[in-house]
Length: 245
Length: 119
Image (cartoon, rainbow over all chains, first blue to last red; front, top):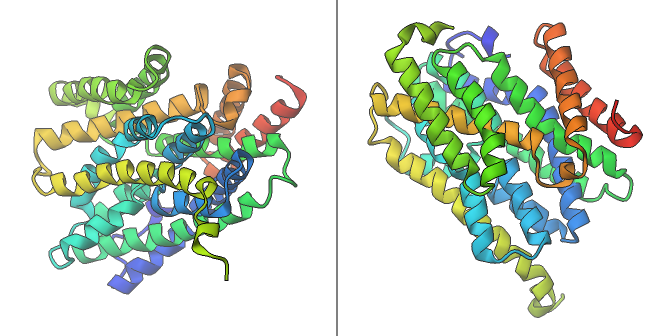
């Protein structure tokens, strides 16, 4: 796990390798099973393998992919799909803003960040947030890319495998596979829970997320993020002792 | 070789349109994040606020995915999902924060409860 890692992998090549090694362990195992669940879901929706692969290929992030399938299955209009997926995935903007200073370096062209931002999703983001700030600047983007590109490739392969599995898989197992994902995310954040400023944001977000969803499913995340995030910010700015809880 | 219109049937293209729209709005947020990030100082209060918002959004989304999911998990009762989550948390802390043990026990518990009914 990254917590035992040194602050320097020796070279840019070493950073790519270590990123790859870290991804092709528990993250690849869990996301691999999750994406088998997603592949099975697409196949149950009655779509083709290409649809499943396009979704994982260019819209990589589980919650938005499941929402797209779910909405397509009930014949939602393109506008409804755009709005719903946009609101679910709006978290990717603050996530990208927060990650960028930790992966940026002076030599990589801007286009590289615009390209690799496609691979920002919870698992790779959490790993990079933990490891990259400790690395020399030139090893940061390589570590992130070394982590997410192999992870994404595993997800593509698993989507494919899962697509052809539903005939074999009982519905309960598909549910178990899809359930892996939120539980894994929850434990990843619990494992790093005590980082400065995080506990208030995580606890308030976890409480407000489901509550606001009951009131307004579409706007729930935006309201949760702004409200819980702002309170957590005020608490950590004005009661600095809480930073070390 | 099949003709092009044999491949690009409405049954093939209608879902592609939905997937394309979903991918476009998703990339909008990521690309906007990259564009904006150059203008925000890492040591500013604004950056610290955005960090808090990001973590709150993630926690909110994860809690919602577990307690009030959309997709196949919605067929199960809240008690089954909450029960599986509690089992997962218990195993995670009992095994000194072993991710794999925690996640696997939660998923296995969910599958068993889905098959046999709630505990």
